[in-house]
Amino acid sequence: MKDSDQYLIKKAFFDKVLTIYGRNAVCEALENESIAIHKLHLSSSNKPSYELDKMVSIAAKKGVEIAYHDKQALSRISKNAKQDQGVALDIILEYLGNETHFLSTHQKYRIIALDGITNPQNLGMIIRSCAAGNIDAILLPAKGAAQISPLVIKASAGTLFKMPIIQTSNLKKTLEHFKTHGAMLYTLSPYAGKSYKDEEYGHKTVFILGNESEGVSCTIESICDESISIPMQRGVESLNVAVTASLLAFL
Image 1 (spheres, rainbow, N blue to C red):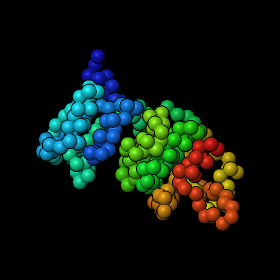
Image 2: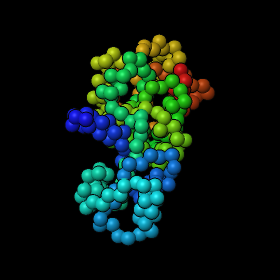
Image 3: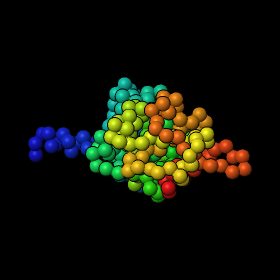
Image 4: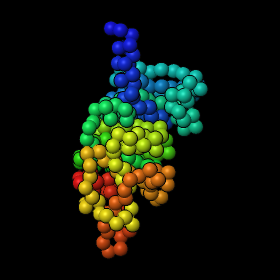
C-alpha cells in the first residue's frame, strides 16, 4: 500500500474521532457499552485517586489503549486545559464528518445548523429528532456551543451514533460554503410573514436554529436567505429549540 493511501485511510479514521474531557464525562463514557472508544489519555502529573483507578481498570478490561502525557501535551489533546482535570478520551463517531465530504456525496439534502445551542440536553434531543426525521445532517460548531458529551449521548438515546454530524470551526464560513453550492439558508422568527409549512423548499436546504435565549446571532442572520415562522396560538411566543427542530425534521 502506498504511503499516500495509508495517509488517507488514517485521516478518514481520525476525522471520526471526537475527544471528550473531564473526569465525570470520561468515566461515564467508558462505562457506556454503546460508545466505541479509541484511546484514553491521562496526565502523568495526576495524583492517585479512585476515579483514575476506575478509568484505567475499565479501559484495560475493554482493551482500550491508555496513553500518559505531560500536562501541556494533555491540554493540547483536550483543547481545554482549565476543565480537562487531567483526562481525555477519544470516542469514535462513525457519522462524524466535514462539509467538503458531505457536499461531495450529497446532491439533495436538508440540514439543521445550530448557532450557539448551549444546553447539552437540547442538543441530544435535537439529534434524536433529526435522526428519526427527514434531516440528512446536523451542522455543529466546535466552539461556543454544547459539545458531544455523555449527557448529550444519553439525551439522544443513542441516536448520536446514527446521525451524520458535520463539525465546523467557523459556522459562518461553512454556511457560506453551502450557499455557494446552491443551498438556501432559513432562520426562524415569530415575525416572519411566511409559515414554515407554506414555504416551497428546494433540494438543498439549511435550517438554522439559534441560542436558547438570544436566537440566531446577527452575524449568521446577515447571510441567510429567508425567514420563516411557526404560527403560535393563545399568545405563546416561542417553542423550545428542540421542539422546533422536531417540527422541521418531520416536514
